[in-house]
Image (cartoon, one colour):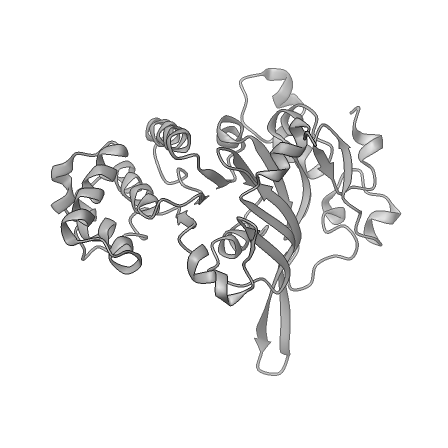
Length: 333
């Protein structure tokens, strides 16, 4: 039976997450007992080879928690995740799958061992996970250095001898040493100058084309996400409130929170600046989240149902989904 284009795209997913949640038990004080931080709730999405999923939202929305689950640094409290069709929760699969997913952190200096030479940093994953000889590991490290735009003679230097952009290139090279299929990019350019950001983003695009990588690109900078992402997932207080193709999200945002985020993005267009949506109040605490939709205390379009029931995730067409009681009333605004 022939598959449609949409069915083929779904069938080649390298990662599929179903209702991932992550809760943490924390102490509130000497006499207050334990409380539960609901860091992530019911996140469902897919990643495809050669594609980039942009994850956006305010600080504290669960982006980094999601990154830790995808990279198997932490297990989910509930939900399931499949990588290459294998259930990550099954212990027999975890050793094989850890090399399939790698991560690049926000701070390139903090993520590199200052006491190790670059060559040792790059070769360490190969030393632990492969049977390659020392000569093979060094040749592979030199080759990867050149792929990320650094010279082979840099391999004997220490991280502090490089600029911020060069250190991030080293971090990217280390993430690719085991030839992963998925790379989680946790704010990979936010610590860099704007001119260097463009260079690193172009490098990531080239490497994605070369290796067929699936990227999860976590960022609070919507202008960067608009440049690199194929699909976008918007999060608020641990919940996915809207997702879909980049063009649909940026052209026709349905959720009030997505509309507010996009209106706050710097623009040279005077009309867009005049239409900025200003949210009132603070981001609620994940220890004591609001009932119903977590965004309703700050929402400019909230109604009674918003404070009582969390909205179902609805398909609004063109692959775009939204969790909002009032998206139909807001779609033409």
